[in-house]
Amino acid sequence: MKNILLLLGLLIAFALGGYLAWQFTKPSERVDISESRVLLERIRKVCKLVTVEGDVTETYKGGDIKNFTFYLPFPTTLPAEKQAIINVTGTVMVGYDLKQLSIEMDETNKRLRISNLPEPTVLSVDHEISYFNIEESWFNSFTASDFTKLNKEAKEKLKEAAEESRLIEEARQQGMQLFDIIQFMAEASGWTVEFEGLVVEEPPVLQD
Image 1 (cartoon, rainbow, N blue to C red):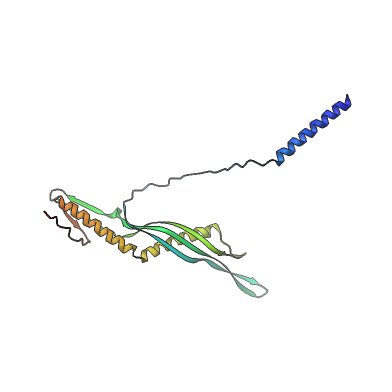
Image 2: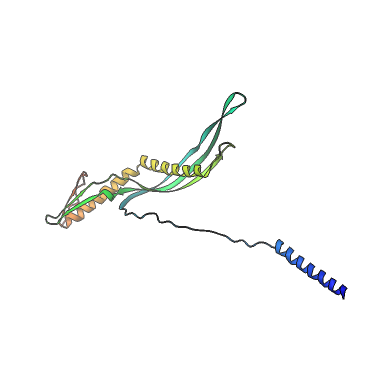
């Protein structure tokens, strides 16, 4: 009887050991944990007129140099440099921010007066950034704040490139054509349009 109980105990222990070993050795289940939080900080009214958009690409070198002083035993300054080649591409939208635009309507005399016309400007930049040839040292390496700064600088680079290109002038020409259309449609309805600070070409004459 004792031998049977001993054998039964050994079988139970063996089965329990095998089960625990199988639990530890089987592939673990992967559970992806993600958390999303959307914060709506503010809502503001916008009135923007996009007349031109262009694709802009810029490649430049970014980084910095930090100087470290060591006493060996005399003061010795050694530079620690980090740098990366940055390629940024994006779509730049150029047009008019009309939030300061003023429109006055005189229904009695059928006169429309438009003033405070803005100059065309860069309205938005949608960009993507890539890093190449990243070089850093033990004493000066890239941090998360560095990449955030480089991303901001890259967006400014695209904006500057757009401002120096022909996009601003093309946006102005498209805006002038739009003002021509506004004047033509208004005068076709018997209204007079006055643009303060803007010379608008005469609308085409309708032929009978």
